[in-house]
Image (cartoon, rainbow, N blue to C red):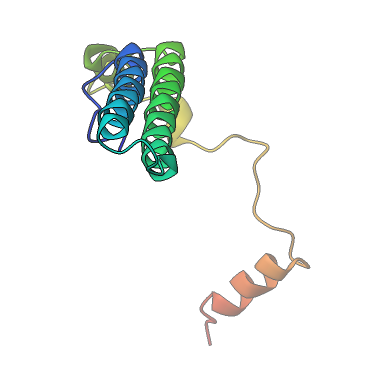
Length: 123
């Protein structure tokens, strides 16, 4: 139901709920004039349920709008500026050469034994 009335602001849902209750009351009064001893519980059950759903939909919509307002808005230009490198075409030697303290796995570690098995043996 929220998707069907997604164009409405939260106050629109509340106004629709009040209109449904007023319409239910009007229908009851019209039917009561025709038959004074009729049972109106079903009319109020349907009208009340519909009004409750509309009121709850308005509450959900207000929560969604509040959550969307808290999230920062970032333009695509800002994202592209952060994604594109500032200096294009220049090699960075710090990134091409591994640091001096970096070394391979220990010979006794599982990865070291795996590398030892995968290295070609010269005969």
